[in-house]
Image (cartoon, rainbow, N blue to C red; front, side, top):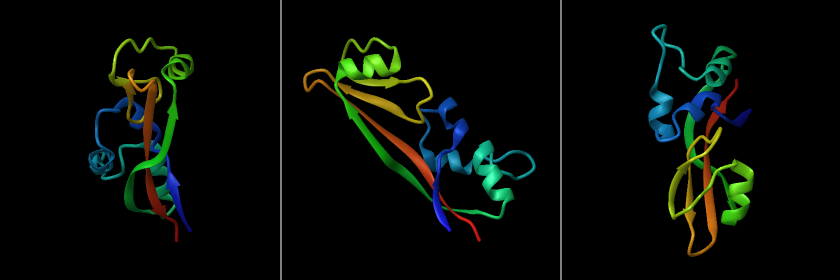
Length: 107
């Protein structure tokens, strides 16, 4: 079975590329991320990073409501529990969030 896995601790490092994050290991050699580590313990292997596996768009007002943040100008924002940054374009009234995941194969 091949499935996308959401790395749960990635939200602590939203500025780090998913490809780099997947290389991070603990001293015992297991994945730093607890959910990836759980899958690996069950025999799964990482196949590839999926840097943009989900794309979510909304107006600036919608993103302000969803995140509880003021988004006063265009740019990138770290959002609560986000695995990457939210890109805001005030002129287009658009917020774009692309969430990374990890393709894993269970034997």
